[in-house]
Amino acid sequence: ADEDDEVSCLASAALRGPLLEKQPNLLCNHLVGAVFVFNSCKAHPIYAAEASGGGNGLTIDFEGASLSGNKGYHRRREVYKMMLSNMSDEQKLEVTARLVKEILGG
Image (tube, rainbow, N blue to C red; front, side, top):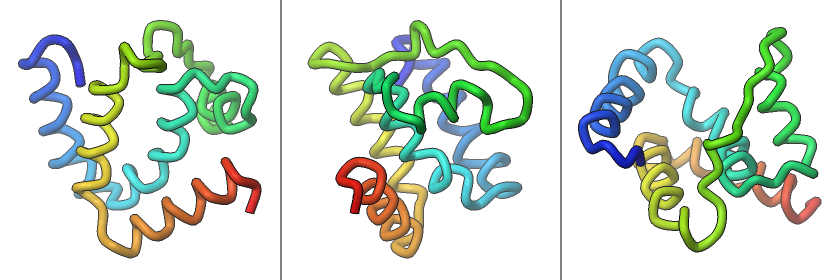
């Protein structure tokens, strides 16, 4: 969803190719975090967890990564659509359950 089509295509190819081959659950494991980051939900613990690099000692600055609001809607949608299109039905159900748990508290 980069403004530069060439960068967007390169990133998509890398995610769909070698990264998914090595880590088949990569997109499934990070879609919920992406929802919180791209919508700038800084008050939610998942945003903080993603910003801390998942506990690997890295701190990630998401300033400039926000795709929140109406302005970022189409770019967010492109990212989510790409992530979901590369997931199995089982992974999609897992993501749905996690979204319900994290957002609705169910």
